[in-house]
Amino acid sequence: MHLTVRSRRDVGAAAVAVLLSLPLADAGAQSCAAPTPLVANGMQFVNTCFGDASLVAACWSTFALAGRAGVLNLSLPYPAGTITVTPQNVGYDPAVFLLPMRCNSTAGCATAVDSSGPGVSESVSLSRVDSGNYYLVIAPLQPALVDCGQVMVSYGVTPQQQGLIAEGLFRGTINGLPPH
Image (cartoon, rainbow, N blue to C red):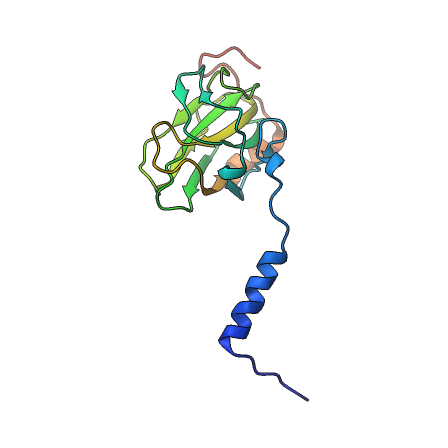
């Protein structure tokens, strides 16, 4: 039996080589045209630097965006749980928007949050959102020190909420918007 002993430098170089060989995320999969799906109790990394450049505002053009927007698709047969967006870059301060039905700068807003500062997580509770399909848009507001960055997006639900989601129950008109 022959064992090969490698130095830490060799192991580190091998790890970097493996990471560099992995396919990069599809830049188009972070746009309004081809959003990445987000599932309950799932987690994704989104690099907004490769996001949608056509979104220059959010929520009926109320909020001016400072950079490209990472876009995820969220199907909510029974809205429950919490979405948490955690910046992976210290200076990045993302705002989070949930747009029903359309993904453009004049689309309406089911909810929006930007309550934390740079490098701090933002959380969106789905308890006051109607059933439907949504675009989850992540981008900083103007003015911003850092206009894009990588974020970790997680969507957590309890086992009871997961059961309601699996049953496909519908909940509508709780936020004053007409049913989808």
